[in-house]
Length: 358
Ligand code: ADP
Image (cartoon, rainbow, N blue to C red):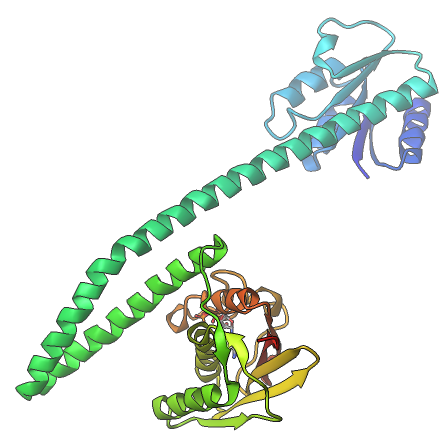
């Protein structure tokens, strides 16, 4: 449905034109003179103006000129109706001589609106294309920065580790603490740089898996042991369920997925200490879930958490919104998937599905 502004000083004609346009399925705004028409157009820019020429307080041609000089109205198609042939009428998109017959009028309205819709689609398409080009350029720059940071970061980390070893040997506590703090921040930066490079290789399809038959039970037991040592204050439970045969996995990459889910479970655990990892089977699939009873995810944010740089909360210090994008892409590379169920205040369950062929 389009909005059509009709300007006509003869009440009977205004009604007839309005009825015809409404019957074509459009919304009509009625104006009784040129001045009123301009004011109404400024209030709500129409998709088409149908205007008589000979009107009081601004003729149709004066209305047309006024509209062409206003940025928000200059592109609005103009259908001019007149018994006379005013000079400059070619500035209007369509000119119809009065008396106008019904079919000609309907056809003129339809084709003016059609043209308007085409121009709008083309403009939207052009702006989408330029937005894609901008985001590609931005992405290339981000990758370049991440790539260039990798070497100086590694060198800074190595040197800080050496420094830490020396100050610890000499028993200088203050300096040791500072060196440890620097190392923690360098590790965070390194994690971010690695994630950016991983995400970009995954998006470009350039990351390859090294899949080998892997026994899930010992793999998960080791993983849980690591987490119990790293986070002794949390309560990790592992439910292995019925035995699964060896799966064809890139164990390092699956560990990366589960580490991300577990670190989120810890990060967003709120007051709850409990985290559960469990394995269940379904035909052709093994399901590994990571469940927490923490803060949960708002329903509106849930569909977007697997997108790049998407975060459900606004605390930037807690993460960078790449982890789940990478985890979901790694699950897909294995021929599986990653999904989430969550409710605000009730915790979250992430389910990694992996195919059972080996
Ligand atoms: P981040 O590095 O920001 O944690 P992720 O991609 O791993 O990035 O997660 C995206 C967002 O999803 C997080 O910022 C967080 O808002 C939300 N999220 C992920 N896991 C959980 C969870 N277990 N509980 C609550 N929110 C979560």
